[in-house]
Amino acid sequence: MAILKFRVYFEEDESVYRDVVIRHNQSFLLLHETILKSYEFDSKHQATFFRSNDHWQRGKQISLELYDDVEYKAPPLMMADTTVGSEIRDPNQRFIYVYDFNKGWAFHVELINVSKEENPKITYPATSRTEGIAPSQYGTKGLLGEKFADIEEKYDLTQAGNGFGEKDEDGEDTGVEDEVGGEEEEEV
Image (tube, rainbow, N blue to C red; front, top):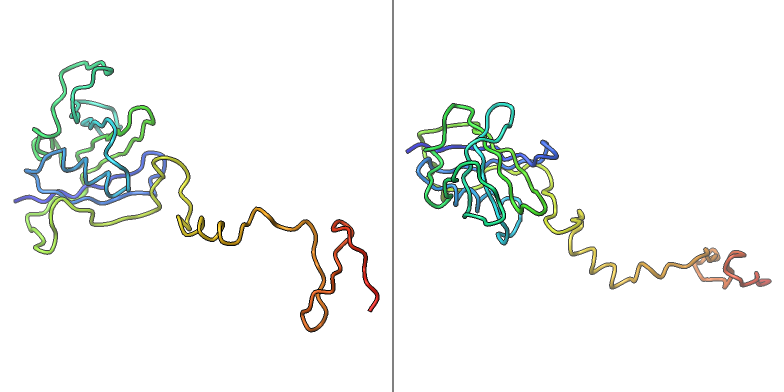
């Protein structure tokens, strides 16, 4: 059984990508779910694949479902009914994957390897490599993630003072602030 390895690039930054491995007889629906999982996206929105050429031009469409608000030039194939291997036309086959038509998340999907050997340790389809920080589906995603929110609440970082206090040699606060703080310097 052939194992297909696809590199799934985030369209806006090709240094962000995921390598996905899938059996040639598995469906585009499984590929769709694996891509979303690898980029930490939910599966609440519309999605479609387009077969593509070397110039990333959109061709035959493979859709999650038929959408009323989309005009089709030709009836699309359905992800659940279409195997990935049936749409491979050349050794470097490309697809464009579009998710959430309102936001327009687009990914370039490129076949980078075909293998006859299955890895018994892998449950196909699977993500075999992750490069770069995935974009946040619904807003900003910081490097610190949710832990930063806990720090912010614990220390209330919004209430910073507007002056610098002074400490003596033992580290004790002298009660002296700069002129902005309003206190005058005490005599010691």
